[in-house]
Length: 230
Figure 1: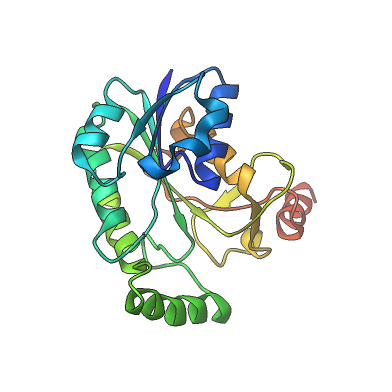
Figure 2: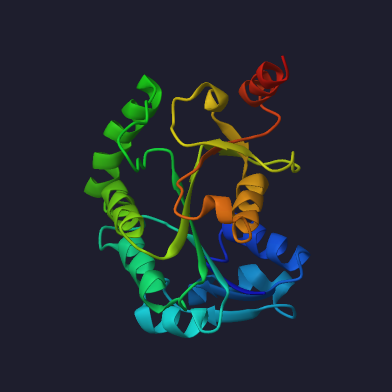
């Protein structure tokens, strides 16, 4: 199995690389030239391709021959960074490849997600402020996911809750809609977010799904397990 990690130098990306290597996959990592040194601990074990992740030539080269592509969708700047990255992956990944993307809970596939006041306030305040300062554009991530959802490829969009660092607790649990009781705890270890993405490569049940995830040891996940066992 050969996989490409797009955005390999970030916190989530480095976990993706490690999980992929742990499974014995051949790994190609894409990251900005300035960030290549962040992958020094992997450099003898992976192929590193430096370049912007929305550079179509870089992505075309990186995904060649890959069975899976793990993409961290980052809404950096105000120039369509996420959309450009997603479109390049959709266009150049080989037919039949598993394409797994990361995003936040604010992305909705069917409009049936129910958001807390806190999350809506964060999006409503941070979104315009981030665009105003040209730091990020949440609408860019929305557009990227819209294109993924419309694609006939074998995609999965993993929607992450709030993230924390810490030792792995195991594979997160998921639901189709934000607001479902199992997701109420709204926290996942970053290492486990990456674990879910890597595991999705070989989970056909997640093809063309947009799972919203939460840590498997969180109170809401454990309560759901008790309910099922009752």
